Length: 360
Image (tube, rainbow, N blue to C red; front, top):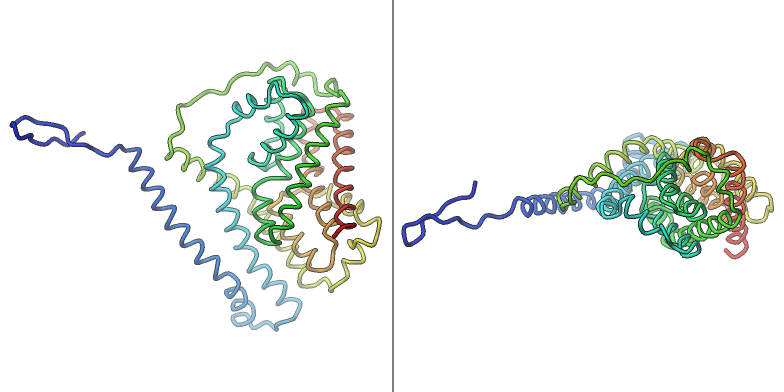
């Protein structure tokens, strides 16, 4: 209820009150600023803490296999999870502006070549778990978006996303992150364009084509407090679903870091062996993880002498061609289309692997 004041004339007048929305925004900003300051302080202490925990508290020998593995795990686990929370929250705010209906309206009616590029770029800011592939595929197909454009989106969404880029930047530097971004977008665009040229629409399951597109229910305008709450829900949802993969990936990376002899992987995954790239792709396909889980393994592989092109090919195959994701897509795609999809995307990944091994 608005507060009342007595005017000089003796009558009552309403005092100006701050809108509740402004108070909500200010509260979120203050809490966010304080949380960010705490985040940076904690992040800066992770490396010294990992050394103290491993070599002082546990008393392990520096340079030993077990000590190196534990120090890697104790340092990378909170590091990756903290990066994950920060970037998911920030992108969650941005993603509140990018709805499925908006994406469909942007992609529908575009020329296929321009649509492939736009779809791949839009895939960067979408949820990065493969479970989103089926509903997005149905929504895009029923909206009249060409099949090739839809595939560009589906390839880029899990493979070239904000999580992969931020973690690559944090763990391996901006050059590797930029290379991964550029090659991932290129694969998504070219593979989508090729699949569109093959005219395989008849190999989409019949029930998908029979669905008529419907607009999502609108639940009112997005205020800034609602956007902040949406971002917080994204953190709970995404981090809650992937943290186990992150810990498993870091554990695998720690084992590689601590126990695989220097240079041993250079024999198997080095650039000199022509078969290293296709072997890494075949090794990656049966695995089931996401960018957050596989990047710590990539970091450890590179540290033990594996070639960058081979490791990037391995990472891309795990994320974009995993067997579990193909099982999910089987709900909407017929086997021939899935086989062509794997062949086209796999060929692009092989080219990227050989190219980087040749020039770096």
